[in-house]
Image 1 (spheres, rainbow, N blue to C red):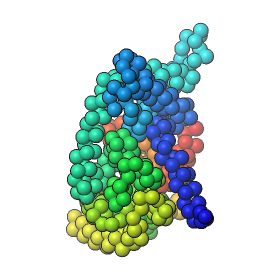
Image 2 (cartoon, one colour):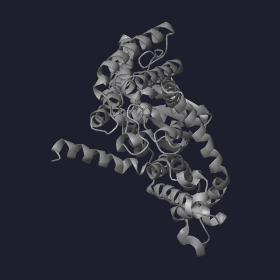
Image 3 (cartoon, rainbow, N blue to C red):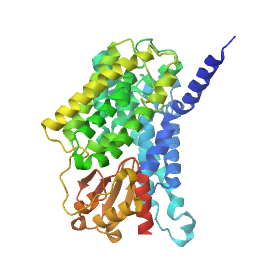
Image 4 (cartoon, rainbow, N blue to C red):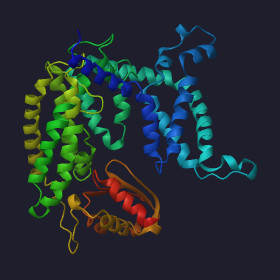
Length: 445
């Protein structure tokens, strides 16, 4: 007789697979909406259109028809065309077409297809062109991904460490998703995430899960301890402001495994410290790969996924995370505190004093007031060409960069400002960025 606990575990694993099995198309939708200038739902449709077009035109059956051969003779690359890597690529195509053509005006006899209505059509045509290019390029890309994955796989625990370090190092560029597609999903035949939860053919007890396990000690213990070190090294006059920002990031990291709010709070203020964080993540992954410890996640390496891992087919001694995590908490705290004080890094709460400007406390912020100060510092609403936001930042394209006053923006209590280019400004707000963005939109409209 099947016990209730086993039924619950099976139910949760199946619920997770509903997401895992659709990761490619979710990437297509998520990337397309995330990169669209106004996050409109039309961009999501464009991402889906692109993904379906590419995966249909380059399926094994379709390629076999083009070549006039049996499907078994088609290169293996086309059998793996429906993957997270292609999902990301489709999302980029969808968002690019949306951003470029959403305001297009056509002649009167085609007026019905003007504006957003033409986006899906243009995306379909662009995806056909992309499919023709991928017909020749994808086997080469796939071969390179397989070769890279195989090389890392052959390095065992060291390879897991190299992957984890690169994963963190690529976050500022947003390229970590492409790297994850190689190791977590079935792009190159590794499929660490899928095999961990399914236990299907190819899963190996004590091996499967090695590219996920090492993130748990970092996200649940290491980064929160690093946040504590940043708080303790903050200036006394700024401790309260730093606490609200760092605590929110630490809680998100521990419970959900969402690390961007915390990482972005010091990534650009102290890039050297972020490099240390990437190296420590690699060490964590290597150490965990050597231990009889295997944990996996469906979303990210937080408390929720750790609890769910106890009943996963490929789980091994999940309880070992506690002692390992506590060790890494001590390491993170000690290393962060030493590096911050030794090199006088400008982590949250250690920025240079701003004269004559009274900062708002983010934890109890008046978002309308923050929005007013940020908009004023950006040169006013007439200086804004494009306005967007991501997980932690308000992203702005400005008309005249000389009108930007960083001192005014910082007086809103934001932890940092990034200037990727002459006419682009990114205001690092933190996990409450949506509320500030909404207030800015209200003022502008």
